[in-house]
Image 1: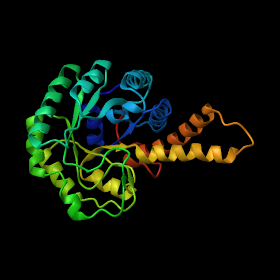
Image 2 (image 1 turned 60 degrees about the vertical axis):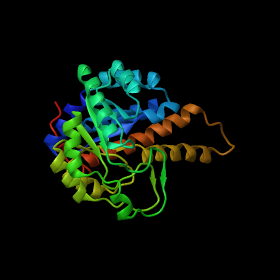
Image 3 (image 1 turned 135 degrees about the vertical axis):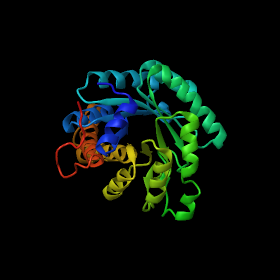
Image 4 (image 1 turned 90 degrees about the horizontal axis):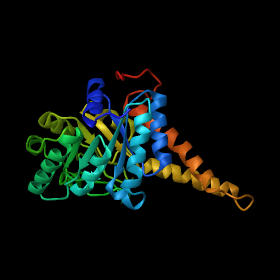
Length: 298
């Protein structure tokens, strides 16, 4: 069933967990996330990122995501991720997306505030929850982060807690994506996360927080981030990498002895994505040990 971004984050807030948010630029990825949600009995967020328009257009993937979510037994938010153009957001709203993110983090602060407030006004008539970003991770989806990150480099782009409070008040957003040391893409070194910054942002902002660049973070750090106020965690790069490796291994094993059909590749990719999605969803809900759900999902 479709659920609003505000409501799905309220579930996370009540249960003190984080909701897994998967970018799904393929049918296999969408199926895996939904099937994992149904199997675990936990909510999930399906996302389409504007940067993935060259992989699959919003006009193709958006309606499919909404239709699959609406017929599912799981509680699912269909969310627009990293939207940088309000006209693109308008298209998603008219399709029936129940969550949207406006990303003005690379703009001057005043322009980010103005555009985020416009996004909030756009979302209101559609009863669509809004996520905005303050601070910058200095990378985009698909980037590879070379070497170890250093605290001074990260401090330059951390979200400022006091500014976060004003940003929330001036924009009318529902949840805030903040920068505390994670990055998009593949890590080549160890991420250095500032949970002190995260705790201060939560205390000042007073709204649920979002972790971007969630792939590659340790399970222990996930739990620290959730305890500090993270209620939505974006996950894409490593899941896509694992699925690609599974497909490549199938080709390698086949060698020249047999034909590998396209449906063979999509099948093994789906199976690997499903395994990964189940682990991610349960880890974010504190159920890595197989215990019962900690949130009340009606």
